[in-house]
Image (cartoon, rainbow, N blue to C red):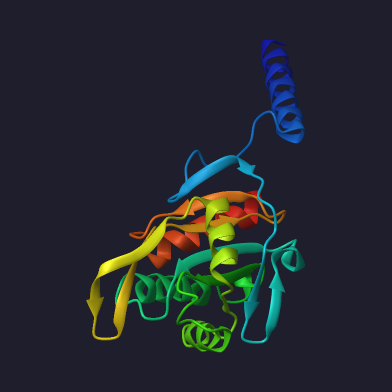
Amino acid sequence: MRYIVMLGGVLIALLGLGLLFALGIITQQPVSVNGTLIEPSEPVEPFYLMSGEGPIHTSEYEGKFIILVFGFTHCPDVCPTTMSRVAQAVNLLEDRADPFQVMMVSLDPERDKPEQVWEYTQSFHPSFLGLTGTDEQIKDVTSRFGIHYERSQEESASGYLIDHTSTSIVLDRRGGIVLLWSFDLTPEQMVEDMEFLLKYR
């Protein structure tokens, strides 16, 4: 009889836990990710910029996760490294990467025309979008995401450089900021975060 009573108590406890899971009070969600998780996600107004194939409005991608990379095509190191790592992550996910849209926003509208940014991003992955606009448009977009950039006093063989925030930003399916990726994340770490988003967001 004691065994039956104890078993009944365990069943009741399990049923109670099941109810809590169903209600979302307890989740199986991991306690951390490789990037910085914004919980709850931070709402951001959609923005409009130009691509090599015409105007792009981020509201058109509602229902997808948007990975925003900020850089410029004459960047000698940080930008191509970041783009390459994101491309590797997308390739590692294979068909599971469909819900993700990568966009690079140029911080150098003086030199980066729509076609040039388009060709640059396409060199990393055929699904990537390259975006640019006027100085005012770029300043408006970067201010929404806290991205700092300024023309550097240093120059390279290809001309002037731009100092800028190297953080990449991931938007959730509703366009809110959900993840911040530092420059040093590996493609494998990005994949883990993307799988987290697919499962829990």
